[in-house]
Image (cartoon, rainbow, N blue to C red; front, side):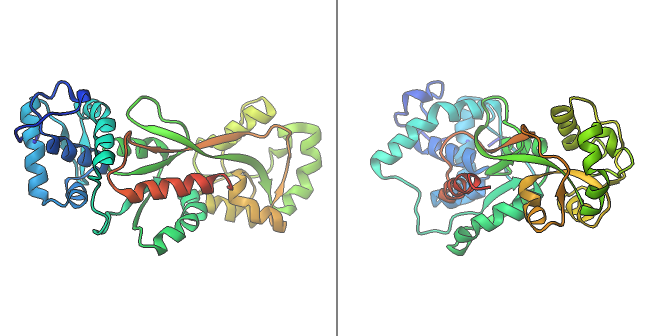
Length: 317
């Protein structure tokens, strides 16, 4: 396993106890690598060459006799020692930078912001919301995917921000509520005319002959809806699976069957009558989405711009 960090030196913040003799510059470089997830990105933020950043991290690792980062195909991932060190030195170094004006230079182009999350939400809500920033020169690198692997990649430094469908556990990540998504049971008008009245009278048994369209075989959204609204288990298997809720939406709007979708995704189809809500329960299932990132102040100022704009926009979704 490859290691990287040395320099002699000056006093360090009290929170850096356990790093005897560590130079402030080494700690600043460490924090930039930790927050950007890459030696190259940190070099750009600090105005250093990538070999210089590598040498400084190797030096710090030698002083601490601990490995701080592990190389990955894309960037580096912090070790548990690095997470602990960042938690102890991050706030003091940020305060020192603010007091002395020693902020990263803003006349260099900031590295791209790596943002990940559900493909449907990214495409229908996030990218339109971020259009003003991209017009101002903010660069984005988007990765769609499921929450659990994306959070693991966030911890490893591959992303700056992840939109998560549940709150991350532990102290390695921080998260703020982004939006509440309401789930709605929908079908095309032709199916609604046939089963709508029966559903109110018979409950979910009225849907036994209607094909279920979903994005995976284990139908998690529909199962949750059944438990929450009907108080029972969903027993029917999917007739069609499409690993993208936009495909599920298209199939159901065309009359293929019924499904459960986030209301934000099908709002236009509901307003136009292409889809009909089969039920309007007083207490619909709601899931809170979160915007997650690694702890501490991001080395890239554009990360904070993207984060703040998303948190504002999420209140309207």
